[in-house]
Length: 190
Image (cartoon, rainbow, N blue to C red; front, side):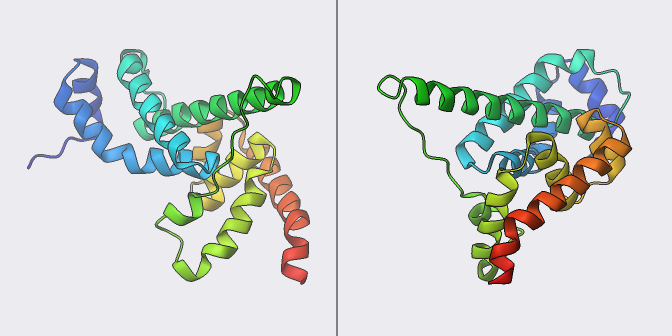
């Protein structure tokens, strides 16, 4: 089987080849899904975000300027889509608080820890507590922390994805760590 390099893949995607899009999805679907899952902590929202990400990639690949890697560009789209979901959730929660009779309440699923293959069964309970604390971070802190500490990205790549300077990423990461220490101090001191 012949494997496409990134340049060939991009060229074939820009020509609209369905087989190239299939290769793209196969290569990136797990990473995009787990990126969204780590941010949203809800499997159905993460699945929707992954699908929306690939739809946008398919629709806008012609405008991809190749100023970053294809993976970075895809991650940027996925992060943006996840943030849109978070904003919609907040708007729905606000509307529910104003008109609870009109807007049904939605339970937030904390299933990210149970479906994330990187977490051993004996660590699921601890991971659930940590992921809950991460979900309470401000959006930019949560994303910076998730990209770097949970997914293991380099600061430079997170900087490109979030469209922030490396210094800003370092600052977000530092504040996220401080916030997490504060949120988790009772858990670890008991």
